[in-house]
Length: 269
Ligand SMILES: Nc1ncnc2c1ncn2[C@@H]1O[C@H](COP(=O)(O)OP(=O)(O)O)[C@@H](O)[C@H]1O
Ligand SMILES: [Mg+2]
Image (tube, rainbow, N blue to C red; front, side, top):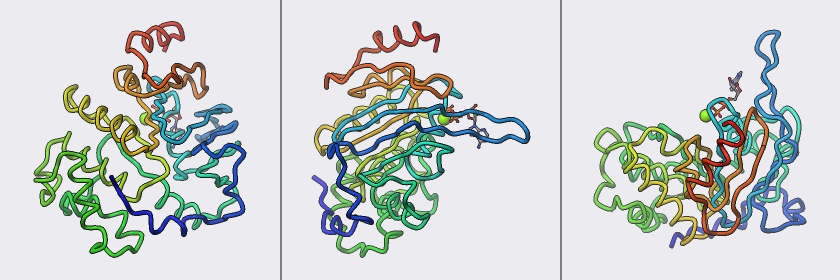
């Protein structure tokens, strides 16, 4: 079990805003719209997207290439701003925060997992995992046992000293997962985390995400175009041309690949 809770009392940037009507909602998108301006042409990447992620859920957003998944994840994590609509993260409406405040929210409340791992090549696995703590100015000595626990969680206890180029793709992604959880974030956002892996390494990553969610009460939002990956989630939200077009699940049992593929066929995804 991961324990770095001593800092949690400092996380509330605007304490008066943290009392939401639905306290179990970790992340909420309301009418989120994103339009990119390409010269004289407007590209509508997201159109009035609404959804909600509850504490402890593993939610997949499923959609074909170009449906707006990465755009959505960037907005949800405060890496970019919507053209219209509101994103509320851990009770804080992002539109009401300054850039500096959003940076702090992102650093302390959100973990990111990307398709290509995004590890720093000159750092060891252990140092990569610790990086969010270092950036946050926290003393590493205090967290040595915590990082050991994370290396253990991702089955890399004997690889802590290895650099990324000394690890397989699946192992690198497991380091990235440990890094995403090091700050005990409110939510982990994963963009096609198995997109660069063979099916066996990919399955191990998805199993690890699901286990982390169940055993550590973590909250995970994963975007993917792969029905197999989506089948590991408790709930699946379908995105097409920047719009939410269908929901599946919410029964805590996940969804079969067949059920997901049926929806995709029906929606012509
Ligand atoms: N920075 C950008 N500038 C202009 N158009 C973009 C930009 N990022 C994404 N888009 C467009 O927005 C749409 C959604 O893209 P994206 O979110 O990357 O989809 P996905 O991750 O589902 O493949 C696509 O039509 C894409 O071309
Ligand atoms: Mg993408």
